[in-house]
Length: 203
Length: 313
Image (tube, rainbow over all chains, first blue to last red; front, top):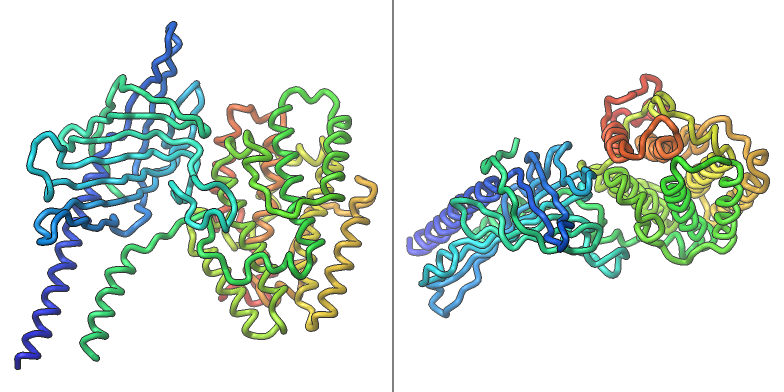
């Protein structure tokens, strides 16, 4: 009898855990889908030589069925932890990064996020930090690192061109700490216009 | 024990739901990867040289776009450069982005398609080269590799037969072969060489395969010995015609390879034609790449591979 109860307990725990994980997955996917789908930025240069650029994208299918995540515990009692999560979603054809009159195809979004809600005790630390990469030219969304490198050749990093920014407030999804990598060369950028829509969906 | 099985199944279920589906990097590599080069180094080095030659031509055409007043002179110059590379081929697979950075940047989707398809080409050669006999184990292994290729849908060229209109039915078509006939025949000779390797590697004994590879190398050198006269191709070499035994064993691989080769010619035409503006290269490359992935675009109703049994593969 006790053994049966124990089995039921284990099974229930696993099923509950799966349900919690599934809920979290939906939540993080939803967060990623709120990334602003357009925006204008510039790389400040002296003598009116700013490099202006903008982006626009539409979501397509997700690369992973669900976002990936794990919890990093901060104390032995496991009461405090922060959660890392990752997600990749492809873009529809026609999504672009416009710079120097050139429309470079944006192919996917990669988000490396951290959920601090279970670890912080100060309002100075954001609940979420989303490190967002709008990736150009990679129709597989394989990066940022070549998983087999160096034994399978090529370069250690996969993406020659992307637009990177961080989001620390999911209520406004404002891009901060932005930089653009253009054919392996990186420039810090500043926001000009945060763009419109904050809500996308995976078809 | 039963409980452990249930737990294991549940964990597997959780894990599988996170599986990735799209990669240009074949990871982990098949156990046979690049073994062809150990058994047939001369042929493998030529294949590396072809990659180099393709990229070099594309980059030059791109950089010289609109500035080619004497195509024959350009053709002669680049051809002599490529001949030097073919006669002294690289030992390693060189990253295309290092040889042709502008080309790689301009045609991102096409590069993804080529990269993935070239890995399939290579690994099929590897399996054929290392397998002792031509039996069911080898056939199953090739099919396994092919299934892995096809599962990567975002960058897999379709294995459905296309008509030659896919290659020749556009407003820019045939520009490359008309402007640079020797280049074109050189590239068709590359394609012939690749296809022929598959065919001779289907021979039953190792001695026969060795002989076949050696003869193919000799024939290749004959084909390019005095271009354009030395290569007799009127049309792009097709796998169905050049590799009937290979096709009988792997019917759907043939269209996958031919569709790749056609896309190479299409890119050559885009780069050469006066009708395509430089500013349209990226867009046209995307459009053609998507067509190459689409099983319904330019679909052929007469497909020799289907009669070989591939329709239901």
